[in-house]
Length: 252
Image (cartoon, rainbow, N blue to C red):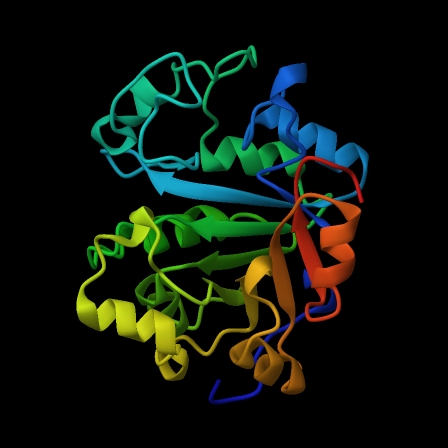
C-alpha cells in the first residue's frame, strides 16, 4: 500500500455481501442469476457478481471460463456471441445467462453491488472499458474489483468514478493462475502493483488472514472484505481481521 484510500464509502462494508448472489442450486437459484439477485435483495444483502465478455464484446454476469458447470450447454464462454449466450439456460434455474445491463436493471440501486472482473491475465483491457460503459448509466452504489491489477490500473488511470479494489490471496499456486508470467506472479504475490492500482478496498481470501498487507491496509483505513465465508464460525474468525464478509451457503 502506498497511499491512503481515495474513495471508500461506508456502504462498501455496511452489510454482508452475498457471493454471486444468494444462490441455492437445490432450490433452483443458480449463482449470478436473476433469482440469486432477487433472493439477496429480499434480505437486504449487498451482492457480489462476476463479469466477463462475450466474443463480440458484450458484458455478461457469469463466473466460469467454460459453460459446462452452470448451463445446459458446453464449451468456452468467450467463444460465444452475445445473442448465443442470451439464449443459454442456466441449469435447473428456469432462466438464461443475464447480461450485465439486465442484471443491473433487476437491482435498480436497491443494494450495493461488488463487481469482479474476470481475467485470463493476457493484457486485454477491453472488459474494464466495457464494464465502465454499462455502469456509467447506473446510479446505484457499485464497486469494481479484480485479481488482475492491469484491469484496475486501467480504470484508475482514467479516474473511474467507482471504488476500485483488488481481490487477493497469499499464494497463486492454484491452476486458475497457471497463465501468469513470472513477473505477473511476483507482482501479485508481493503486491507491487499498489502504486498503479491504489486500491480503495481489498477482497482477501479468508483462510490467509491475518496477513501483512491486510493489516497495513486496515491501519490506513482501507476496508477489507474476506471471502468466501460459509459458516458463522468462519465469519467470526474472519471479522477479527476484516471489515465485512463475502458469504455463501448460509445466511449471516
